[in-house]
Image (tube, rainbow, N blue to C red):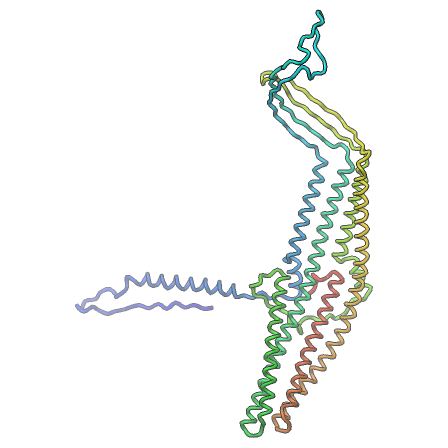
Length: 478
């Protein structure tokens, strides 16, 4: 965008008195030029801002898949779960470190001598030194400055719990990859649908152009006296029908674009444009063999790896519960100073090593172990079912891809013949040999052929996306 600054000057001649004077308006010229420059710069910024706001985001099919793998809402949810699992692992690891606590206690207490459980007797006279029914002693002030340390020296149960939490964090990370792969496959499939909707809209617009030409020919022939009103009515009806199809196709296109924005994480009010047309999407030069595709599906699929990681985490949890039966060795240290005032505080301490063994806990440990073992069996069953489903998806995608390739080849021939039929029918109608009924019939056939072409291409690329999803390669789509 080019901007030009128009600068004018007022070069007036001598004044009425006949002597030369300053040019009229010369004192205001600098201010005027400054206002022009400021307005121009402001307009430039507004234009640049408007062009950026109106800029469209063009994405390919592969871009949509990778964008969804990064920005889809399910990915953020899975990442938050990873953070939660990592925090739990940190908590389990913290149980292996010593606990250190400090305390400052200043208190007073009174005592009842009757609660001692024994009496003080004068060794000479044998008389009790205090009343048998008790006397009140105190208050006794106490100042206690102390720290306590409790350290697990050997605790296999806590160590196993930490390892299980680490495995759960790994499983949560694998689930993020599985969610990303699923989002990528969904975005790619939606992209194919959006490309088909765009192709359908283009086809209906092309049909509208042909219908409008047919209506123009019918009206010209009617005005020339060589046509009939019925041909005009037929042409108008065909044009109205195509316009209704355009409205439906445009609505379908807009809805699929909204779905694509939702899956890829693009704002709903942002402008999104498909860089690949349905006919422009690449066709696979060679298909992988069934054995190669199955190997990739069973080994590299993110959801398979996620279930494997989940099963391993459950096995680690069961192992940690079994280790809770092992003896636990701990160290306790209590050290500080105590006295009646700060002038005389004497050091005191207590330390000890404790060996504890759990004997009976009401079968709670055994029930927890059974729960983890059952959960691991469930995950193993889900893993076997997923592998079977993966094998089915790979074989079905290969079948659909081969069939769709044949359909694309067949529909191309059908489209060529339909276009030829329309051309021949139009020539006959222009020559006045026949009415426009044959042309309308040919247009309907061309309409159907274009729809079949779009359906065949959409089926092919949909099968290509399904195969990539089954093999775990949706994010690698071009």
